Length: 143
Image (cartoon, rainbow, N blue to C red):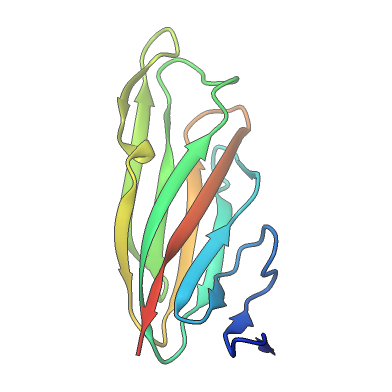
């Protein structure tokens, strides 16, 4: 459902003012805030899951996680799927004392999202402890 503001900018999404797994639209601008999502070993946490409409979308995606429970020798990260096909996986790796030795997952990514597609971004971990993760999307849609 679209809500029309006085400036005729449509606002759409599952929760336009808060956190959700959806993508929100304000005119031709888009954004999403996942809020805290728990990833567990063998069970990915869904940061975002939505479908694009008739316009393609270009977003910047930022991934973060709580560093209070980083375990030694573990992999943390996220994966992007478009129409149920994994397109991108990006990880951070901790060493024997829990220090991040490779932090690729924290690099902001620019991502092209095709029109009429189902998008899913999930946080992942090989840790046996739960990991609190976060995602932020910002960008534009193009007709």
